[in-house]
Length: 339
Image (cartoon, one colour):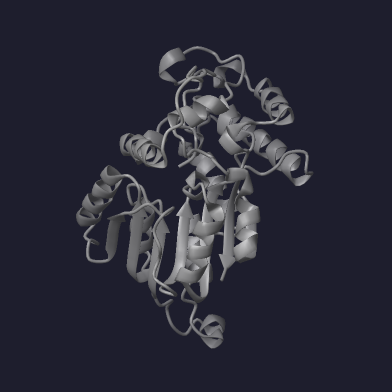
């Protein structure tokens, strides 16, 4: 999950004299952090992707502009289990489930339950470093009646090997940017995929530790000032009801202090994937401006307020043009790669 978990205030940890933590201590801190921050932390009026209109656009962009309900449906229906060429041409048979898929950094299991609901695979595995998240995933699988299909385990992907050539697809949903050794992990994923297996990565690929450039900050702040005051009213606890006058940018040191795994090598993800896989599609999914510019105010843009939606559409257009022109880099993307 991406770094909107941090306070909107730009504060520093002030712990420069602390001794370096061991990797075990770091892993424990990361697990504890994500045990406390379940999927419920990313809903409501503060998180940008919790806004229905922003999320709808995110899903559309993830599918490369194609009409799918979500990026998950896109990955399954467009790439997995298509059958023979004749089946595809004449749609003579329904799509068949593949044998097995793996979700790395599964959290509470929402992705796996979605995959199960659309008959993706005969077996779906989910792994995560945080034990409480795995407990939640198992409980939700039981509640959904798919506990025989979904198989969860606590696992540190950084230190664990995978079975060779077992999986038809491997998913990273906002989890790869938490990994410290990208090449080792992606090499293991390559070996764990079947010969024509897919890697699906829905991910933050922006600056490490959210250390935004001056140009990125300038663009966010400039567009933010275009937003009418009534749509800049904060829903955050510390300034609820107040009109925001500027964007609160994350402090990289505080990002690392709160969650040592957050965006540790995020800006290197694409190069690492290209070293190990053939990338079939790279779809920018927005967020370069929106993620922090709309932090804590995203809930002000609602379908029942046409003026707010017009403003949101303008922001979408500006963001897309700045990224398409190369002025700004994409911070979020859907990446489809093949073994």
